[in-house]
Structure formats: structure tokens, C-alpha cells
Image (cartoon, rainbow, N blue to C red; front, top):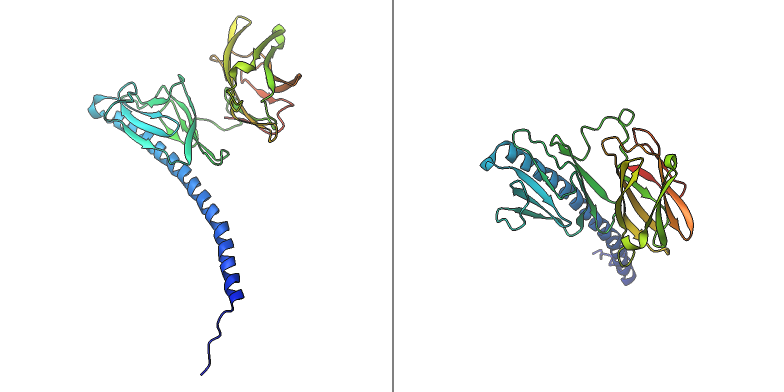
Length: 294
């Protein structure tokens, strides 16, 4: 009789060790995959809910309009011309714990998209962006058109070579932290006009967020801006995701302007808006990483 060869203790421990290493590698990867899947599923579910609201409106269910309300951790299908958080017939959809709605950019500044009867159009068009809480670089944006079309791309936007550049919403990855910055500066060279904003009042307590908006009168025309951040990290790991909005005022805001952040006594140019109807923007020399139009 041939006896079977048994494993030695060393061999068993080696196999167990390999299995532990493989598990240590695969479990985090699986969890990350699951979170990305949660983000993608949440996007699709919100798009489907927006389309459902539009279809219900077009079908004149109850002879009323339908809309969708957005918050950080949930979205709500509701009926009527305004959102009532206490309405008993609201359909509340909670997002997975790993996903959040971090930016709502809708015309009118609200948090709801309401569709019109007969046409299915909406006056609350714009963008709703979601991201992973544990990896904020993983972002998905839903585009809602005035026509009522909804999707991950803006169907009515022509090709990049043909369209007018509307720079009302631009992201800047500065490559440095603005936690020590003191002043926002706007310089309009045609009128030799300088406007400054004391930044101290617009940071949160721990300087991880900054949010300012205001209006300057230049050449008799209102120039409206909003400057805010998505992220600020300390100088030990310097990073700022800055966002600049410029209201084009139906094409009237064509004044050339350079926007600076004064940091530690240094004027750091961030954006240079040219004097043209396309509202063209050049990246400043203190944007060490990227500038992207949204």
C-alpha cells in the first residue's frame, strides 16, 4: 500500500499566509468596486426618477405637475408646483451611505426640478453632481436640459469647436492651499477698476470651505461672481479645488477681468477673462494643476 504524502506544518502555514495576503488585497478592491457600483446605480436611479416625473407630468396624472427634490443624502419624487417636505405622498429615495449629492447647480438656485405640463420642459435646468465620500475624485454629473432631456451628457451642447464657451462654471485645481489667503482681488483694466473682498468672513471655522458671492458695477453694468471651494486641505498636504461662477447677464458681461487671490502678501492670478462675447478664460499662472470648464 502506498501511503499519501501529508503536508508539513510549514507548508500549511505558508498556504494560510498566502490566503491571508490574497484576502487582504482582494477585500479592499471589492469594497471599492462596490462603492463605485453604488455611485453608478445611484446616478441611473436618479435619471430614471427624473424621467418618471416628466412622464407623469406629460400623462397629466391627477392633472398636476411632478418634480424631484435633491438633498445631500436623498432625493424625493413629489407632485405639485412646489416641494412640501411633509407631504405624505412624497417618494423618498435614500442614497447609499458611500454616496452623496455634493453640488446642485440649477437655474434659479433651488434644489428642485419641476416639469411643465403639455411640454415636459423645465425652468430648473442645470446640473446635479454625485460623488463617493471616500474618494471625492469619483464624480458623476447629471445634466438636466431646459427641454426636459436628462442624461450624463448634455444633448443640446454642440461640439467643442462650434459652441460658444460659457465659462460661468469653471473648476481650478490650484495645487496649493488657500487656508492662509486673505483677499480676493478683481481687476477690470478697461476702467482701471479694482475690487477686493476680505476672505476671512467667508471661510468656515476650520477653513476647509470657502464661499463668497457678490456684484460689482463696472461701466454701468452689474458683474456678478461666485467664488467657492469644493475642497481645501492644510499646508501639510496642500490642495484646493476652487470654483468660479460668472453670470453672463445675457451676454452683457464682456468686461475683461483678472481674478487674484492674495496669499502671504503675494498676488496670485487665478483666472483672466477676456473681453469677448464668448467669455473666454485663460488659466492663471498660479493654477499649478488644471482648469476645466463645467
